[in-house]
Amino acid sequence: MASDASKGGFMTELPPIPEDEFCVFGTVFAHPEHADALEAVYAEITRLSAFEPGIIYYCLARDGDDSTIFHFFERYTGRKAFEDHNIQPIIQKLINEDRYIKGVQAKFVKPIMPTAGRGGDKS
Image (cartoon, rainbow, N blue to C red):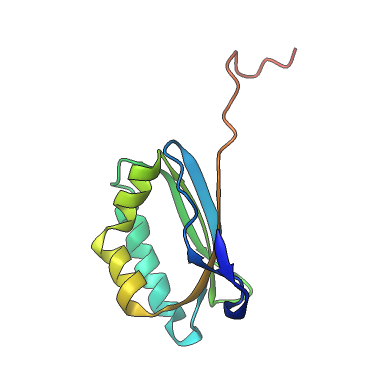
């Protein structure tokens, strides 16, 4: 993941997106004057994400100590689901027009999958 130190270590481009299941988590830094508007957009994005078949889990939260910071955790079935999510008009408007966001720090990871076998067997 590329970042630019002069921009506070924010992402400047996406890393290669896995073809199969993955998670992305991180932090969004809002411009203070737009933080409430960003929360409203995120509430709608969260509602819409429930209807996207490739999203396994989608959670956004506003920081309790700094109201200009938002945390996110997203889990996708793969690259196509992530791309389908990000081409939604509401996402494109947020990225390209709204200017609510100062920067983003994110990490893409592979989830630890449960082992095969009987659940709860401690032996």
